[in-house]
Length: 412
Image (tube, rainbow, N blue to C red; front, top):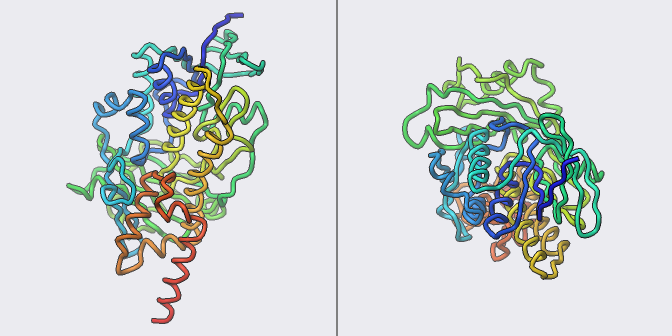
């Protein structure tokens, strides 16, 4: 059986795996990436948030992405009937990037993968991890390549960036139920032939059809647009089993987007993902970390998925390099507790979105500019900034403010 030896084996060549690989390679660690699929491949998660831009920059991957001219995302719009709430990332509490991208993920992920190959990183497509044996200071990973040839790879550390493949959670039985309500989604791409000129044609929007049911519209720079619906699984399952018919019926409920997408055909049969939220019992262990969707996935409403993926991939790389250089690393504190803090903030926002409390804050008139700037920083991904009370007190600040606003409205 073929034997290879590296410092770090990365499972998965999505944004998390590529950011980790880029940063490790930049800092002279030997890296191998194995990816089960062949790129380009379709994947969801097409709206980024500004915090993730720091990760591409740190990994030396920003320039290759800049060259692709993806649609720039300067904020996000939320629509509820005649009410509109627009967040501008340049007007937020925490300093940081003021924009990011809206991307067809097949193109985005392939750009990252080809760039790390160009840098000299060993990336094998169509290679599946079959087994992992941890041996104290190193691990033996058995993989099968596209010809079915078995190989064994010795690695000092494993970063599992396998996304929904969830390789290590499956092999190590780490899956755990999510605290997020069971939601499902239908989505597709269209050629956006009726796209308005100017900002309106490029703006990402979330159109609330019911408190727990909403439509996303994400325009791309190539003229196509991603459109999808999210709602409780019970609601999604009441729709037609024909996913194209079901998605068209939901779009038809949108006063804002009905005319724009009327009569437009989907570029592929709409995909359906059921009960997508997931969690794990632990984020790391001796010799490995779980990153991105291989560990936690909350909900697409605030586009946090890719940001958590790249945050955890980069942090895994940084902490491993410290350990490689002889430093003591407290993985539970520096990795698990750190990542959990950010995930817990966003989890609160997701839960309060579906209770309607966050929507109460979004659409309250007159707007409170200070509150809006603090919420905007969270939506931009700056969920570790505890100078922001909407981060530090996330457990109760949204609920309490919504309670006060609703009481004021009742009194009026």
